[in-house]
Image (tube, rainbow, N blue to C red):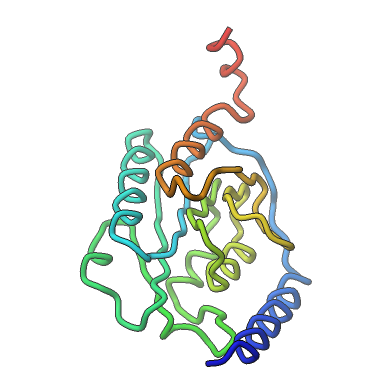
Length: 189
């Protein structure tokens, strides 16, 4: 596909997303790792290393007695074996997108309609299918590092993307531990 078609597809997708957002409402609340009970994590599945980092992050959160659900997007048509068969992890592929990259999958619909306290976007690059589901998620507090027009996140973490996903995870752990936490100032004093 040529660049003009990709640009057209993106513009149609953004227009359809904006239309879908017209009637969309969600209850916005700030949560941290002490007040949250249910956390959703989304990420593109582009490398085994990033997937392993996300799994370790989810194990860290589960150790805090949090319910975790991971939704990964694989930009290919067939999911590699190493991205499946993990507890609490679902994957959708490019095969489950319409022509302007709107996800059309039961796992995406279920994820979007889940009432997460926190939704964490572990994307370091823009993927329109993930933008679609994050934008329409009913999560109360959305966290990520991508900064673009119409960004659906409530908290945007500023990181050096060259340092990769481990830095984003560390920043998410840090800020979600101290934000809106009345004990954070007492501990550091």
